[in-house]
Image 1 (spheres, one colour):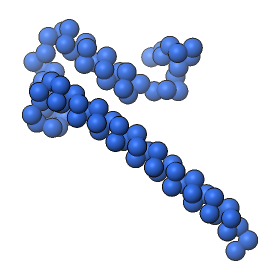
Image 2 (cartoon, helix red, strand yellow; image 1 turned 180 degrees about the vertical axis):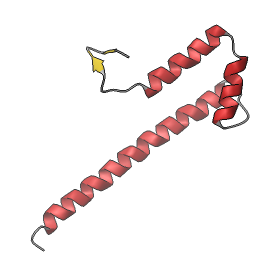
Image 3 (cartoon, helix red, strand yellow; image 1 turned 180 degrees about the horizontal axis):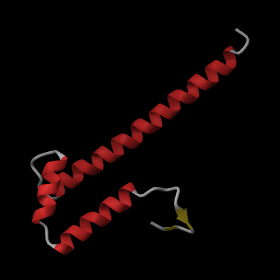
Image 4 (cartoon, helix red, strand yellow; image 1 turned 90 degrees about the vertical axis):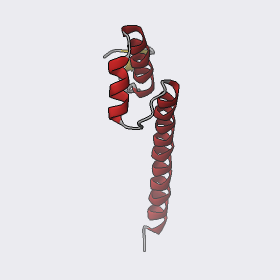
Length: 85
């Protein structure tokens, strides 16, 4: 086992990567749950969200759309803190 230290380091790096991905998934799940609670959506599915969007007026829809854009915006396209889409 010549590379046991390297294997251990790569294993530790993999564990950290999985932990970061799990943390991000939990944050996004909390965000979605908050949206469902804020807008009073009983059915916790994409169909319940779609039904609520159909009932919204334009201002409420734009507010919700902005929240989703802010939460799920890609961090890689930013140039001088301005996201170009």
